[in-house]
Image (cartoon, rainbow over all chains, first blue to last red; front, side):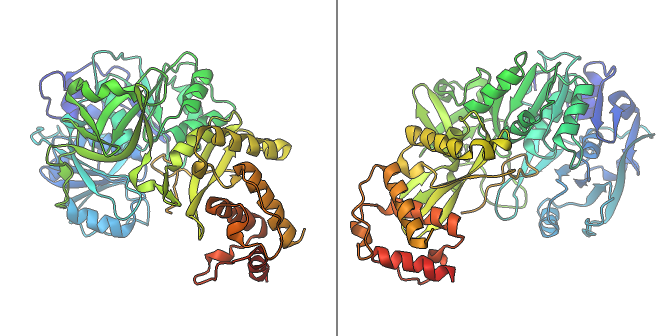
Length: 463
Length: 80
């Protein structure tokens, strides 16, 4: 953090820039930050959670966004809990994080009674409150990893580490951020903090709000900065009325941003800067790339910008910085190696003077002993002008163990009937020209949609 | 189109894509001598499954076919 070491989010807001007309906005309403400073959305005095480990579990992340400002500096820990965490994971989460208070909007019957003694309701309504207690804790922020299998791990962060990558000097109060993310996940939380620290307002999507409806709200609020995963952005490009006249920054993170998508965004939003960022729940924010090209300059490897060190070990990226999580709650599993690096599991490849992400170490498909990363095949398929997005998966067979096949979603569904066969042949030709033959999909299937998870990432089946 | 015709037409297509030359496709042709490599057969199996809706090789302990006739028979059996 640039100026000293402010102890809490609330202090930053009160001491920092004028709150003016700044607000947080969800699908069900809008709360002015100034009002929030004078009141509370909690149904019990805030002092009750002082020094406690608080599980923050609300249906709409907007309620979480309001509660965070109040809880930080008061609670010992805040566990940011996405709504869709299965009940059995919830029980282990409560044990791992030593939760002794629950803050919830408790509307949904799916919430089991998690056996936490103190339960405090919260809402979207700001009520007058007694002056809040002094901020005396360096609250730990606990985030669930977006691991694809098994129970999620709980990464322990601090506000200092979470906000280290945020440069407050260059922002203006006219900025309105929007994000397609859930702010309870690392990528979304970054945007939430960026908006709060940078003097901006923030517009959040509602639970199950259709993308087109959210875009309408973003337009209404004159959103200037917007963030999401490549899958989110591909959906945006599929919506005919996707104009955002005030947009000056489109940010992609969480998945590999390929050139076809970056070019598509450049065409649709010529006035905006298009950037992609690389971050993970464990590694924190690593770098961002604003030159409009996929991949990242190899020079970043030795640059130590902001004391971020990155290196490539066995083709996989490792990161050391003050933005990484300090460990996992309730687990002895090491998060850092002996030298303090996080192993990201993201496989990279050097071509010329740039590195390219080619997939996840765990996602490799083995075709007759040769490795294929589904993402590298998808990035080739996505170059076809009629393709919006694609999912490459493994299909088992007795001859080579597996082959890859591709599910392809076209920009215009009518194309499938008009010239599906030709598009299929063109895609296969693109792949044959760019990839060795074991990476060329054995089969192309045109699909009406591809599932995107609550994390904003394409749902990948496990081979 | 019979299963045999379908198998033959897909073998032709895969061979063309992989730039391989096929031996004359008779029932007693040993698959290993057909000109398709294992990747070629893997692709063939995936496409036949897509078209016929069956994957005879998904079953455990299925005997791998030796000749083209066996291969066609495997698919015909699986469809029953």
